[in-house]
Structure formats: structure tokens, C-alpha cells
Image (cartoon, rainbow, N blue to C red; front, side, top):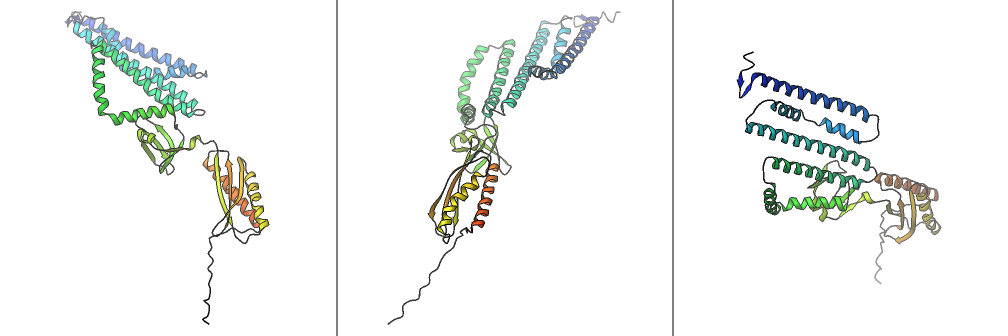
Length: 353
């Protein structure tokens, strides 16, 4: 018993053991509570169609054991007498840990909600999904900025003076990072103005591909050849780009030539053959077909039709079917396709008289 009553740093061994036991029980109890609540919510979420319970389960899964340990040690420290300085240090560390955990919870909850919202909206409005992704980053930035200010205020830092100093320093930083800020504002412009969104097929100068990611500084495009092409956002907005993702239908203009020996009655039949070949295909709209010009080695017919889809593969399949049908009808009618030819005329000089 004398050992238990022995003083160590103004507390008996018994008091230290009681504080340690309280900390261990608190830590185990908090772990148990979170485990039970998460399992109950997981079971509830599997029976409902709402997403809020799924988000709560995900947020709880982000609870850090270190934060629970800090809370447990803080509660245990209240059962012993500590110097004022030590008490303040333990209190500040615990508050910082709770603020850090709160930041993780809020960020995880916002990220999980926006991820589900983006996945739901991506099928109908890719532009909204792109905007939500950017707003998610801004939201997380605001969360951590607020928590940082609260933490500094708790540590006794004069936030008013700090904010004023950051304002002056921000001007210097802005001047030193003009290119980075230019890309940042270009990113916001892309998100708000939506010249393209995730999934759009774009052509910029000689580069072309599908937009995979719109970041704060760069936009990444997956090219037709498989490699990833990275564009600076500022440079991208200065370029003239073609966005095939906004194309509702595709206008197709093609020419074909027949030989000069083709009879006139066959020539008048060709526009009808072309029209029949086009209208026989689904998802097409015939526009026109005309005997357009006398070429160097062919009589040229110019035709236009629309494919009622923006998909390139759909267009190629339809064009192939049209070409095969025209070829078949030309064989039936005895019409010959022209190919480059050149007629050389030889003349014999007149004999001298």
C-alpha cells in the first residue's frame, strides 16, 4: 500500500493508475461506440435508397485512432494534478487533434457526396459534373482554411494581424506566380464557361483526343493513339479548338467521278442512285446530289447527307454501306468509275511542198 501512496509529480501512484485506467477505458469505449454505430448504419444503408446514410458510414470510417487516443489521454489527465503549463499543452494538443479530425470528417463527407452526385449527373450533364468537381476542391480548401484559423486562434495567435499580413504578402506572391495564377483562373473559366467538359472529343491545332481531367493548372486529353496529352489551361483557352462533343449530327460531303463515256441517261440516273443508297440507311437524312462539274478526267457528282449521330464509328459504318450500295448499283447499270487518265494527241508535221 505504501507503494500506491508514493508521490510522483504531485500525484500518488494510485492516482496515476486510475488516470491510466480511465484513459484505456475511454479509448476502448470510443472505439466500441464507433464500431457499433458504423455497423448499424451500414446495415441500414443496405436497405435504403438514399445516399446520406452511405456518406455518414464513409465519414465514420475516416475516424483516426490517434484522435481517440488524444481524447482518452485528455480525460485521464483530468484525474491527476498537473502543472498549468502541462495542462495547457495537453488541452491544446487535444483541441488541435479534434480540429484535424473534424477537417478529415468534413472533407470526406463533402468528397463522398460530390462523388456520388458527379456519378449521377455524368450520364446526363457532363458540364455540371465538371463544375461540381472544381467546387469540391474549393469547398475542401475553405474547410481547411477555416479550421486552420480556428487552430491558430486557439493557440493565441492574433488572427486579425495574420490576415492583414497575408493580404500584403499575397500581393507579392501573386506577382511571383503570375503564370500559375493565370492557369488557375483559366481553370475557373473552363469550369464556368464550359467550352468543353469531361468526355468531350476536342481538336487543338494538330492534337486531338478525349478530355479526361480538368485540373487547376492543366487539362489532360487521351489521344486517339493512346498517349495522354497535357495542355496548360491558359494556353488551351488561347487556342482555337474544335469540340466534337457538342456535335449533334454530322454533315457528310462526298464526291464521286464517272468516265466521260457515260451516256447522258445514265448521268441523270446517278443522283437517284446516290439518294436511294443514303435513304436506305438508318439514322441518315439526305440533303442533295448533283452533277457538279467537268473534272480533268471525270464527270464529278457532289452529294451531301447528314448522319444523325456524332459518333465517328456510326458515320464510318454508314458511309461504308453507302459506298457498297453505290458500287453495286453502278455495276447493275454499267456505269464506270473514273480514274486519273491523260490523253496524248500526236500530230504529224505537214510535209514541205
